[in-house]
Length: 170
Image 1 (cartoon, rainbow, N blue to C red):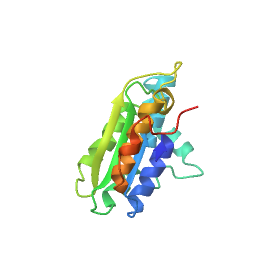
Image 2: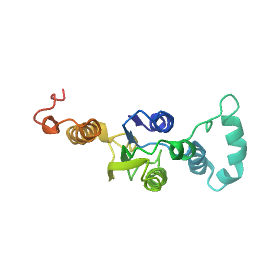
Image 3: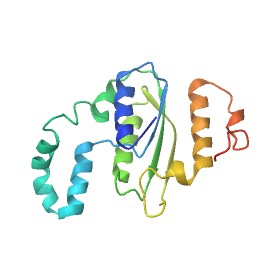
Image 4: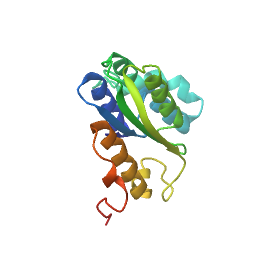
C-alpha cells in the first residue's frame, strides 16, 4: 500500500516481489520525470519543456530517480493475475490523472500478471488540498473499500468490512 511517491515505490517493489498477492495505491506516481515536467510548467509555463533535461540531470545528480520504475518493472512480474486497486483524485494537481491512466493502461495490458481489483476515481478537495485526501475526507468509505479489497486478496470474509464493524474513527 502506498500514496503518491510511496505508491511509486510500492509499485516498484510489487513488480519485483512476485510473492506479494495484491497492492493498493492512492495517487501513485507513474513517472517522476513527468511529475517534474508538470511542476516546471506550473512555475515557468512552456519554458518548463526547455528546462526539463537540465532539471532532470540536476534531480538525478545523487540518485537515479528512475533506476526502478513501474513502467519497466511491472511488465516483468509473474503471471499470477495479482490484484491491484487504484485510487485517484481527478482534481489532484500534484499527481495528475494522466499518471493514473498510464498505470491503469499498464495493468490492463498485462491481464495474465494483474487483475484490476477495483478503482476509485473521483474529484475532491479538503480545505484547498487535492493530493492524498480521500483517506482523510472519506474515512469510512476509504476503510470499507480497502477492507473489501484486501479481504478479497487474502480470501477472507468481507463480513467485517461494513462500517459498523470496523473500529470507530476517533
